[in-house]
Length: 530
Ligand code: ADP
Ligand code: ZN
Picture 1 (cartoon, rainbow, N blue to C red):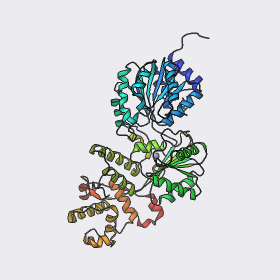
Picture 2: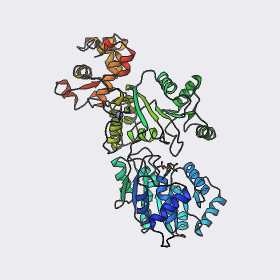
Picture 3: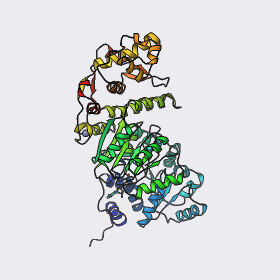
Picture 4: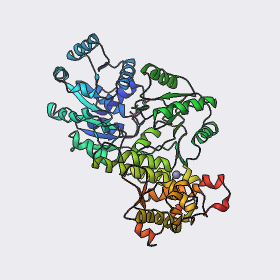
């Protein structure tokens, strides 16, 4: 046997194997850990399930002193502490759900150096009481979990996170690690600036989740589509269905139950005990489908979720990626399925325009929504699009719906011009804007009451779109929106307006290749297709 002092590498491996019971580090874990052991700051971007926790847990145990973990979710904190205690690690937390006695016990243990890892909620960390407590023991490192919460770009902004930049001032010699599963350039930059981590090294893991199959379909009858998706692909398996509203969660869960699929609603409007009970069942029973708003999922670690279904389009790719990322954490095949339609786009645009946010916020939201829309409308591999958004290049995956059934493209210049000129003439002649359905009725030459009352049957485009079905016109308008030839009017009534790009298409100066909807083809006879 050799008897030299163990190196940092050896100590880290020893902790990994003997405390956590794992044989080897995954991809980036080892370099992150060594970086921290050397006392240097870092930012870690790794997808959910990649193993971020060990990146700070191991060095906190190797370095002298006690580690402090800032985590935004009390439930998550509690689970982690219990898991660590089960491994014999002296872990504890401080949060608002604890009693005075519990808090005092933790504070006493901390002051004596009896705690290896202390989990603290961000709003608690920066109180004078906690700050003076922390000063009583040498600190090995600060880990800032869910660091994207510092970003106003993201969907989880928490103002308390902004205060965390102070850590560098109070403890200039203690290494800090910020971790997140959100890796867009903006979020990254905001984390680096706002948490005072400009000098820190950044570790970016691959964001690909090869075991997830992506599929995005056109929404027609969403309940039936969802039911068919589940029963044909994932019968009796665990899954999450994301909806936009609480009401919808309730009604979709009820619908699925009637179809013989065990489904439970989960949203912020429910009684907390009932909600906790639903989460418990989802985690501990097999084959439960959780029908949830985005309130559900952060920190929920269920490895065998076989599918995530979106029946409403998420606001951003970040959100989509986070939510779909909850599928297949065990590495086995899983599906990310989504149904979206023109109404989703219009509804989301309307929500942005009527929101209370300032113009900068609205602009960010529009950019995010457009990227999401582009992913839905892409004619190339979904995975390539998705990873490209996160700054990663990749090859077509062969495993998404687009790779499996590449869409047929058709020349949509004339169809596009018909839509745009209808929008144009309505505005030019009547100073009025209308929604997609109204435009489509005009193109199809339908004498609705409104059309007749405005005498819009006199428009030159009335009835010039009879060669296509209503569904096809929906698809055309969606793609025009996705490609920036149409926008939704600011008044907030989901009315359509031209953009700076529209004129070029109207003058025939641009090509327009549109995707043929496979669903429409299979549902209807082929001769109505372009
Ligand atoms: P994240 O925080 O990135 O979502 P976690 O830290 O929760 O991921 O880790 C996800 C899962 O992977 C956990 O069950 C964890 O125990 C496991 N894990 C992490 N690192 C390793 C490793 N080196 N070897 C084996 N399992 C690991
Ligand atoms: Zn693909």
